[in-house]
Image 1 (cartoon, rainbow, N blue to C red):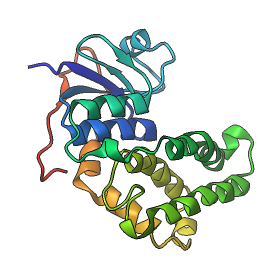
Image 2: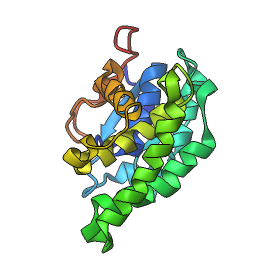
Image 3: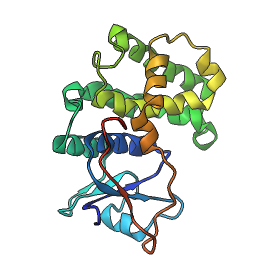
Length: 215
């Protein structure tokens, strides 16, 4: 049986990761179409001409081409761990608009002609804010992970990976275990399986509902 919903994704994109996390925790059955960003399929561009991922095409033909819209759509269908109750739009906006700006200019300094050290240090200021927000509860919204954690974690992961030795030397006693726990989770492992790029002639990759043990 074909999946009713179709997700165009790119495995390493943090925006696509957050969408897959919400689909995964909600157990929303869908067809996963991995995209080569250098050779975007016509079907993706027809659904969303801007050509960025993730893009979700629902069974009803509705196109969602913003990662947060996909997350909230999926969680409105099924939210077994009440992620929507821990949704901090202001903090997510700071991640997407400020931290992502510095992350790009730190990671891709040659592309932007930027000073990577300056943007690394400005990005670290955001990590310090997260450190305080995690607090004793262990998550950004208290004692349980929620939408905010899933929306921000992929970007912190990417930042940490630019210069791992430098990151490991930082004093972030709350944020580092938070990141490590999310990366070690079965949920994250499940959404990071490598798949071949999608082809109209290939077999569909259907993502089924996760079991409680998978989460």
